[in-house]
Picture (cartoon, rainbow, N blue to C red):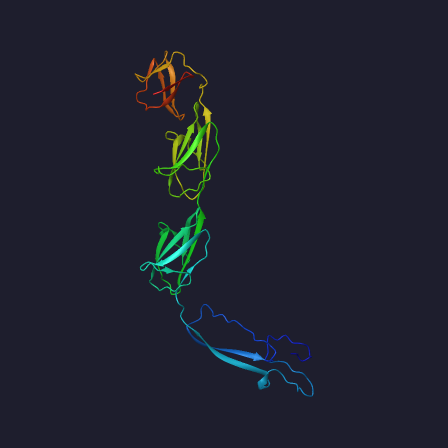
Length: 322
């Protein structure tokens, strides 16, 4: 085709036999009303060549210079469907609550239908949150399951998020050990540095000094828990954050001594005998101070449990088993 100056024109398409078919997409507006609408497509042919055999003319001045096509577009009410947003590190499955039949992304649903949605995290991950029709519904999830009702004419949409499980990090330490276990779960093995943790579970963190050492400091998740230890152990509830555990152990003052002068422990009477008025400090094997008193000649230890103890008598040391 050419224009009035015999230069090639920029037509999208025309009726020439050699021009291939073309396609135009018409998007139905989101707010389109239900019903039928008449649509019209007009093709124009605006070319002409001046000459003896080609009389001049303008576009659309003859029947063969263009064409009009009319057609009807009918908009019907949409079918409610299930939409499951793509997610990573886990899967979302949906089933009819009554029949148990699986419903896949894009399947039809009905208003008033109850659905059971199950969130299955991949290994090392956990369910984090979910929105239903754009609204947060995480609080409705129990045991990674949620039951909900289709309420919108357009269907229901589900978007879930899975997050990495929190991990345990145990700092290296000297002159003592740190052990971590799930509390009230004797059948589970001890946890190691780098292990993933189950949120909502209670863990027991035990700090055990080597012989002749005591706990100087104990830190859990950035908190100094030294004063909160019970027999060297601290209980902590696992949340969604990583847990870092650290400790420092110090040598007990005077433990380089091997005797305490005339002080000694009598196992039969469970009494610590002291030569004269002395300050007595008694530690258990974890380094915890269990007795501190000023005694004249004896110190009754019958109220203590069985175990190994270290007594400091005016800075002198005596070790004994009760």
